[in-house]
Image (tube, rainbow, N blue to C red; front, side):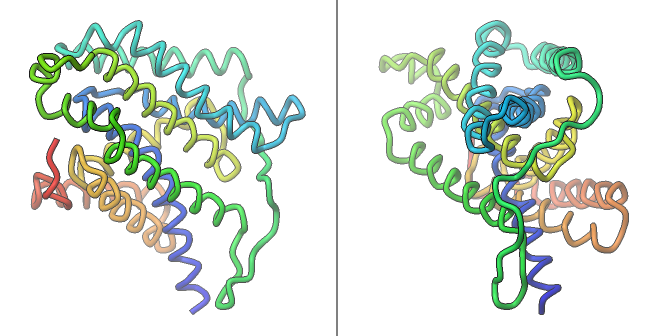
Length: 285
């Protein structure tokens, strides 16, 4: 029983991380049809923000507050300088964002140097859950991720900005016809997605190896999550996160992480082949 519960909690931790990373990508790729290969670097920037604050003597929580801000700033600059000029040129967007990702990686290396950066979690030790003991920080991560997901759902479904986003997604020309500033809506949505990715990076920093190249792995998994679950849907995002995160966690106990990643990729290909619209195919972009 102890092993089963620990495995489930490990899977839930990974699922929570993938949901946050995938949530930002779902906005740019799933909703805006922008293939942003620099999305993983928003995660990296968030992790380095926490490291920088802690290295300057600040607390983890202050660094975590700075992480989405750092992601939002980078995302806003990227959207304003590059993305907004390439909405109608998807191939150019792929090449441009790939170049931006390399620039950000090298920039972080120049600023912070080579080697992994340590990030200390705000709470050490474990919590007794009756059937097992589990690291307290991982439980906090799961809670913050769930609250963030709930907040995004409420934002999209209950606010005027969420209504603007849904209107633009359905028909951009019609949205412009009724007076919605689609360029501003896209810019805010892209920046918001980058902020969520930055938050994910801040949360995962104590559990990961903080390197300038760390975002690459999260980018690949985020694409798996969005495509497998169903493009343009919160429900699809959750389904894809459970599929990818749960399968990865189970396989990591049986085989090496690199082989587990390959098996997950193969399973994702099979899932997309069998269900081209995603596991949660009731959603549409």
